[in-house]
Image 1 (cartoon, one colour):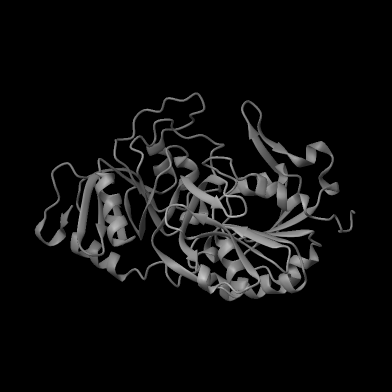
Image 2: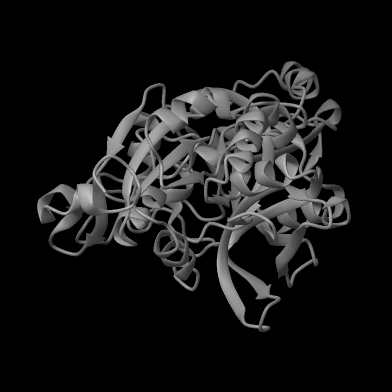
Length: 396
């Protein structure tokens, strides 16, 4: 890492990560040619890079993978959490090798190029991760040019001019645009994804209306697996839009950006749902929005939590869940009113990872209990939510 003002592009470098403070990290570019500006974060998962890249919660972010071997199993048509990648690009240690997996359809670098995403390999990701831990997640530009023709001062200026994620509503950019019924079920080897319509029981299930702030597809699949009939509404859905579907419960999804910014239109809807005593379950951004709706506030984290190995303590009995996380904002526990009880806490830094309202049927967690990628310790939360719903719609 060096200052761009005193450094020329090293011979053979075709990729660069330029930080807003002028630091340049050179490597070998892969995937798409061009540049993109966003916030640099790191993810500690050892598997699931395709799911990470397609998680809408990574909109506006450049992912540094701490696991060195990214791309070694290629890509396939199943391990995606949205119709397209939302992470801007990625930084990896080792060069992307030829894939070795029976499910592979295309090499990772080819998939990145086809989807317009930029990658850099040959980077000391341990040093970059340490820098993020010490200084916080920086704004940066990731760039790839096969000839290494980088205008470093211009890239620095672009990184410095980017306003950052604080105050930015990104849910509006990644949410689905229309209401839709969701029927896809869990994935099994050799069979692919299930379909709740196939069992002929869909209309007999409790009806969950999921508000999509940037949801991963596996969240909806897990609601179906837990026994729900699922309808999906965009982030901008009104209280009337939700109630028109006669929900037995409402799910608040994950998503990117600043919850306070998204809350400008989302929180009034959630408050109306609480006033109507509609059961609510939220995760990640949905957790933060529920906290704001209940009277709390959120704060920007120094480095955020991203990975599939985050230990969370359940306060009711001390059980520790290993969880999948992806968030750069957190609920300020001290801001929560008396009727909101913290339920989970991070064992990494003590930050809030769960809450429930004592006077309403509403609870939420900061992590991703659908675990795609990651462990499955927390699937019980979907079962708890769906089991607590009473079928009361038109088909009851």
